[in-house]
Image (cartoon, rainbow, N blue to C red; front, side, top):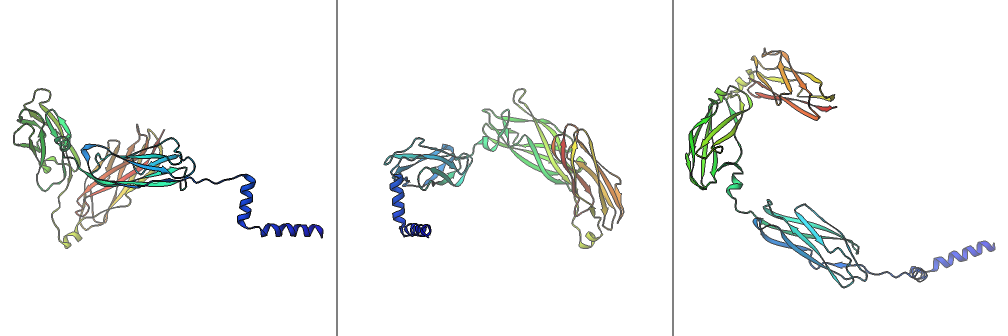
Length: 374
């Protein structure tokens, strides 16, 4: 009974102590004194206004004060993007002293409005402060080098190739490509040029003034090219410049599709239709050097004969061969596709395009995917 009474008395003494009294006892016993750690940023958002792109990076310094009772330190500053470079006071800042966080923004190739943040982590309480910089980048005036980045002697062009884009077999196509003379003398195009028969070239003007612009016009006879899909040819132009700069070599590229005239609904119903049993074959992992083979079944679900014009792989490592060129309505056949893994490593993605007289889907693509390992 004495033991029980002593325990109850002790419990009563503990529960009757106020929280303040208990905390005070702990403070007195441990000699603990809490000190305030705080930083204040009088400015947390800075607007640069309009920033000319050509004038390069801009900087702003955010100043802070240690308004606490103990030294504080900036532990890290993380920018929201790589275009913003931060710097800051690395040493501890004593109570009443000041420190800085510097934000630098690079406007190069970033026209338009920007709004970026810096996350500042400190040893104060609270330990995270968000700073913001914003503004609008005014694009720099474009130069001839911007508009015509590729140089061949004194002739500047947008690309080292002339891309005719998507063309059809309906009729020849003419496309104009702008060029620039960066030299100090007139640039004259010679009458002679080297190109396949289906490509014709003209110039406007033939003589381009110094720092002047001109045009190269290409006429592409699609039917004469007698091909489907992506094709490329070489073109050589000649100017009055000294050798070897007088010869300009370009690629002329095009993606050729068969032209189908507009059809009535009745004609569409009667047309041939190409249907595939699958469009993707996964060959999984295969050792380098082995051949991977598969077949894709095609069916003519239309009411007229289906003609396979051509099959074309996207690389020389893949070969496609249809069993039949013409399928009667309702008939099915296979296209065999072989992929040679020799010299290949890692993930592979090969395609074969099937060209047919299906007027609604004249080009369809099948894909081989997998991984080549040693």
